Structure formats: C-alpha cells, structure tokens
Amino acid sequence: MEIVLEIAPQKATHLKKRLAVLEQYFRDGSLLLSARDGEKPAQFILHSKDSFPWLAFFKKLRVFWWASSHQAIPYAFRLQKRVPEELLAELDLLSEPELLDALAALRANKYFPPLPKSPF
Image (cartoon, rainbow, N blue to C red; front, side, top):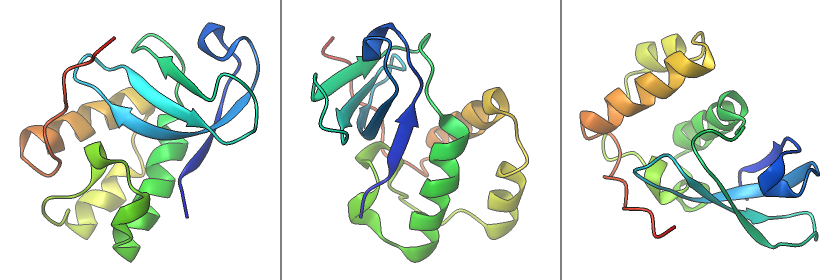
C-alpha cells in the first residue's frame, strides 16, 4: 500500500491534476514524486514554492505511523522514535504552515532521519 496523493494542477505537473507518491523530500524543501496515474512524466519535482497537499499527506502518514507500516512511508518521514499520541492529536488541528513548522521541529528533535541535499 502507498500514500497516493492528488497533486493540484501547476507548472510542475504540466497544468494537470496528478496522482502521485512522495519518493523523497530534500533539505531545500523540494520533493521528488512518482506518478501513479499513467501520465507522463512518470516522475516530477515540486519546489518549496509549489503546491503540495501537506494536510492530506499528514492524515495518511499518521495512519501508517499508527499501523507501523513503514514500507509505505517515505524515508524522510519514517519515525526514529514514537511521537506521543497527545502531540499527534494536536498536530491534527494545525494549519498547513503550522504543521510544516511542527514537522521541522520533530525532525530537529530526531524523530525523523536527516534530509538529504537536493541534487536538483
């Protein structure tokens, strides 16, 4: 099972709605995605200024954390230690910018592995 997300039409998706899986998240905020809709290109990159459905991603990610199904979780978000349930409940209530800040804080506190440098 994979975390398949609906990516909004934008320049990186050739102005088409895409279904994709997050493959890699990089230090500069760019994302490498693999399409799951049969369209080309099969892989595409979103930069930090592009639109990514972080709230939808987090809701699905949380289910995989709870189920301890690590194979479907992108490496950048595989837990290195368990996040307290109370904190997870609070994360559900955050706006997208607040959620991104909270995920960065969790990464800084070694809940996630360090992000690789972007090759792009």
